[in-house]
Image 1 (tube, one colour):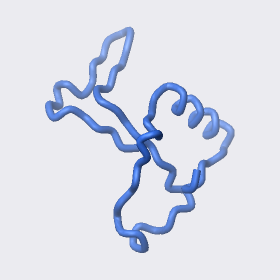
Image 2 (cartoon, one colour):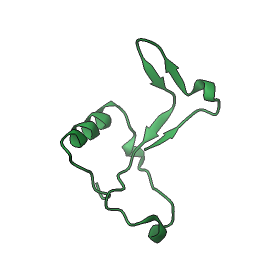
Image 3 (spheres, helix red, strand yellow):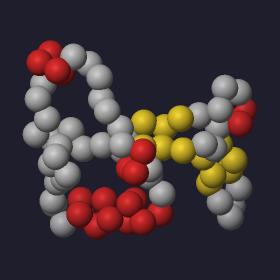
Image 4 (cartoon, one colour):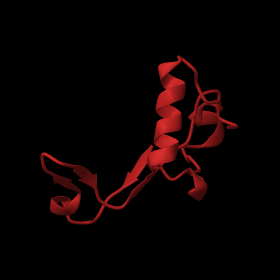
Length: 74
């Protein structure tokens, strides 16, 4: 997961008893089964459709709770 944050660290998170809000957005990619970094360089490509919002987070948490993993090609 890569989290893109505002330039000002004071704007990164808003925390209260009702909410924890991270500013900007995050993208995710599975590296399970991906070639080692030395073979591919050190670049990880993130698909814009892999934005980490509510539905993908629920899907990932459900899979991980069952002990499943996503492969690099997923």
